Image (cartoon, rainbow, N blue to C red; front, side):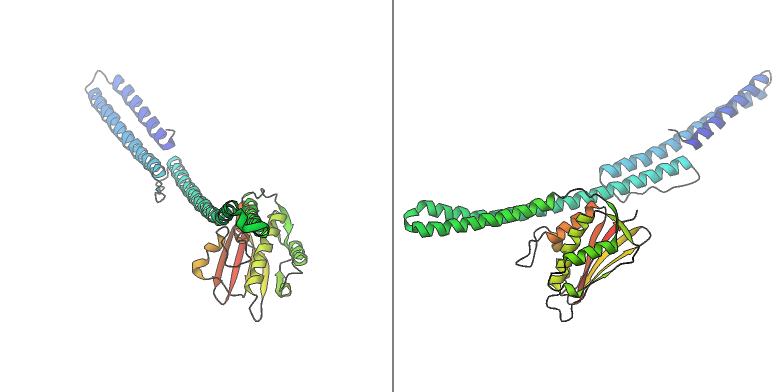
Length: 328
């Protein structure tokens, strides 16, 4: 191990032994040489014990580190001690690896839960669509004479409607899981807001939207993807304020030392606390006309940007969606 402090100790010890050996050889004819020989032996033994202890301590730390990684123990921490730059650097790197490993583990767990949710919903929706198709088609085959021409046509139309609904659902799933990688560029947010204003101008309640942005603020992002995410979030705010006496929707941007943000605030009906995480589950929707992919799609877009989409809401007071972008 290339431990500088240990290296200095070894060199000093060897130098001392050599000097004592030379002195012992020079005084060989006297009894003093026996004393120097004894001292040399003691120094060698002491140096060996010290090196063994130091290396054993470092080995135990390394063993604890690998054990923590192997057992997913993210509470392990290695404290820097003394002025040994090599060991302190090693411990800092070990702590960094454990933190990174924890972050990766958490991300994998979140992805596993995310895809399990999608599979669960997919299974439910496909089964709900296929069951009546299978049942009705079976009846049409068995009781073709009883159905007659008109009954058969009605039955086929019903089957066709179910197939169309299933196709719409699968297209939504494909859209959610096949987003392109962001092509980022510095975008002037006031220009982005002007574009949103034009796109949403025909939406019911769009006159209640206020866009707030400093003139010179720019954010590194994929304009097409972020526009899609913002439209989803703003439409969600428009729907939430449908029954509000004096609806207000505020879209604002800002910049901090290490990040930028775009925030969508409304004074609508709000979201109950026990539903805050459900709203990001694919295909989960409390609205009959809702597809349930708008919010999951927006969050996924932010994840692809290396940022995040978080929500805070008070039932009866309103909701805030905050899109946070890493600094550049």
